[in-house]
Length: 415
Image (cartoon, rainbow, N blue to C red; front, side, top):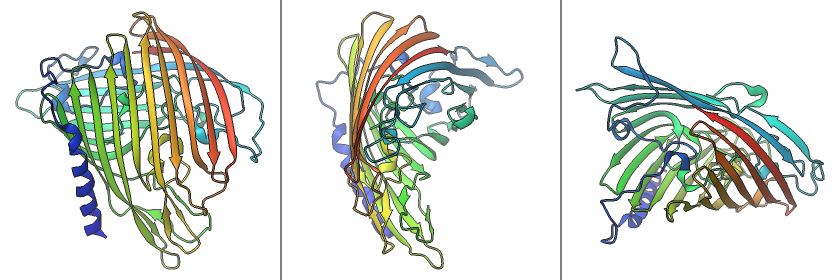
């Protein structure tokens, strides 16, 4: 099994290199710089990349040390009206759209006011000569039942290494336009994991990242209630390459892991290979427009697609105790237009497919799509308001269908 595991990672990683070929038409003098306000969250950088200068706006010195500290985050209040009674009152997820045959199907709409997306972070950096550059970043929010605080990010960057919990190596957040809905891009591949990642800027245009990550979302459905549990025996391996040109960026990546069921002394045991390929990009058109895309394809990795997260979408443990992996794929496209320097609209549409076996639970999400369209007004760098309309539809394993619509408004103060 180990030989097969590492042979496949070599094969998949080598297949991503073709997209990185540089052409003579590309300019190395005018590299793409993505404005901060165009990215939902900051692109993760190592200390070596981020500390090109000692300028750290908003920070203050920790006297008697060579460290500087900054507090950040935002307060966000959301006011939404759901037209079709989706079962999650905080975010618009495909899997929460009621389908015909479920008790929730035909529910009436409701309103919901929330502020639990609010988040805070601590950014601590060391600027010192003849010492390795260091950064510590901790961030959390209150997006839980009962508004309890939860950890989002807790990592260290040391030189070219990122160590701790943060976005996975293949989370390409810049491949979607800004959305007000917390669920964001249902077809986006990624999430957060504890990891060790190495990043290196190979040239002005090409950056390489290699990650070893903990596979936390095993996603095995055990509808027959067989003895045992999903277990992790090997880490997930990921490779990523970013390629920039004058007006755009292309992200490519691949990952490989082992999915395992451990039956203990009495239950069945089985394992299968999980693999995924991701390609995504952002292209600017003039100063006030850009479009984005994200496509991913693989086997036994459905839990890594936001739309399928939490639905045991990687594999099914059948009655014979064998793992039946599920082929998954998703695509997302987005567009941003800036009407004025302070007013912009964002459009996103995502669709995902899951090749579900007959042994899967009948009302499990099989495929579906979701769209977002919004209008956001930025008074200044700290305060913004906006409104968003979203719609979605899902079809389950037993071919039941459901659709839903929602309107959401927000006010946000960033610091």
